[in-house]
Picture 1 (tube, helix red, strand yellow):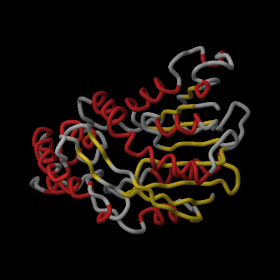
Picture 2 (cartoon, helix red, strand yellow):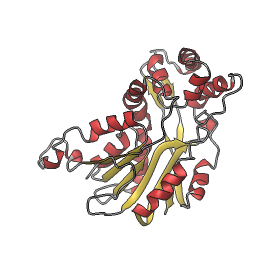
Picture 3 (cartoon, one colour):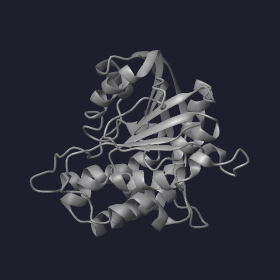
Picture 4 (cartoon, one colour):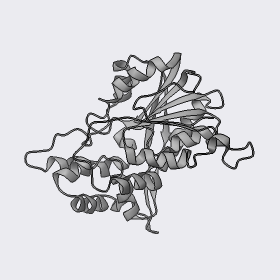
Length: 294
């Protein structure tokens, strides 16, 4: 396999939190693993293996890529978050000499790694081979405007894939099937408490039934199947849960409207019904995925 990371060049975001590095680590160490069942289910469905050349849009800190690489896939990741991408680099490209790793290397999934930082998706390999799978594991449909940048990204990526390549979009399931939805409503309430109410992109909103299908239609993709996966969110304690949830970015608008300490306090209170006797926090959730073809 050949893991590759590509860094987008987004416009500067003056509202980005000062502790971006800490939040990225919270995502990588606490929150990202909550979606591991989704990664595995999609890879099983798509039969990801040595013949797979995958482009991961919004690859985050690289866990989904690492899982695919362990199955033998050639993987390329694109993300606009530099802190998360740095963590993905540490996971997938920890040493400069992986190109020369021997066959008996304890980390065969990291051999022949390349890192491209030209600011745009690139062909799957040095030979210019096209992708046959494009994935979007950053859940769609839980924040206002969260698909606005994705649609053009999908349109740009499509020419780099083989004709009829598979594209997998993912998102939250119905709010009534997601215990975390009640906690995420805190984000919307706090954002709306500002005077005047905050209407900036990124604020949480309830998932709609056809969110994934809407993105597929706007990107010119043809739906070709779907599925649902149980992804419970489990945390060692309330503090870990708060840190993990805030690392998603879904509470950023609330923080801007109030302050971080207020958001942390109210999220902790909203987690109380999900706290078990041993102090752990457990919230059952269902996520959706939509398989499309280019």
